[in-house]
Image 1 (cartoon, rainbow, N blue to C red):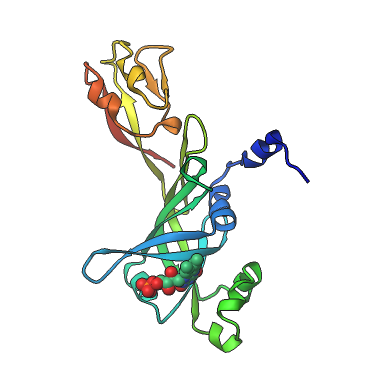
Image 2: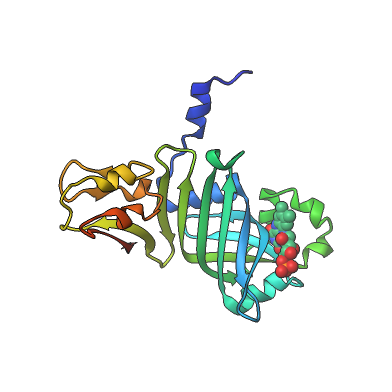
Length: 227
Ligand SMILES: Cc1cc2nc3c(=O)[nH]c(=O)nc-3n(C[C@H](O)[C@H](O)[C@H](O)COP(=O)(O)O)c2cc1C
C-alpha cells in the first residue's frame, strides 16, 4: 500500500500531553539509548541500554550484575541518558533524561521479557536470566528536542518528585525594539508584537546570538523551573 505524503506527515505528528507520553516515546519508539554514568576516577562513561518499560513517573531497564554499569549505578544512584530517532540529523527527534535510579527487586522480570521478547535471544534460559536485575529511573527531568520541525521544537518535562528545569532566553525591559535580535535569530522565534520582545523558548536553539548582538544588553540566559 502506498502511503501519501499527507498521511506520512500526520503519522509523524505525535501527541505529547503528559510526561508519560515522553517516557513512552523514549521506551517504545526510540528504545535504545546511550546512558552515562561516572567511573571511580569521576570520569564519564557511556554505554548502550534499552528502555524496557515506562509509566507516568518511571523508566525501567535491565542490566546484568556482573557489569561495570551495574556497579556504577549501585554506587551513584543517578543516571543521564539520551535516545535519538530519525533517519538523518534533519529528521531526528531526541529525548534526554536524567534522574535517580534504584534497583527494583519487586518488578517481575517475565513482564519485561514479555514486552521485549527479543531479550529471549540474548538470555535464552531461565537460569541465564537470573544474572539480570531491573532498575527504575524515578524523580527526574528531561528534554524533548525535535529537529524535524521548522522552527525546531524543544520541551522540558519532569517526573516523580522533581521540578522541570530548563534554560531559557529572557528579554528585559531594557529592550527598545530595535529588532537586531530577530535579524540574527536562526529560528525566527522572537515575538515582536510588543516591546519588550519575547523569545518563544519552545522554538529556541539557545544559540545565544541575541545576547551577543543586543545593544541594550537586554537578553540573558536563565534557568526556568516549573512544577
Ligand atoms: C543495541 C544494544 C542494546 C543494549 N542494551 C543493553 C541493555 O538493555 N542492558 C545492558 O545491560 N546492556 C545492554 N547492551 C550492552 C551494553 O551496552 C554493554 O554491555 C556495555 O558495555 C555495558 O557497560 P560496561 O561494560 O561499562 O558495564 C546493549 C548493547 C547494544 C549494542
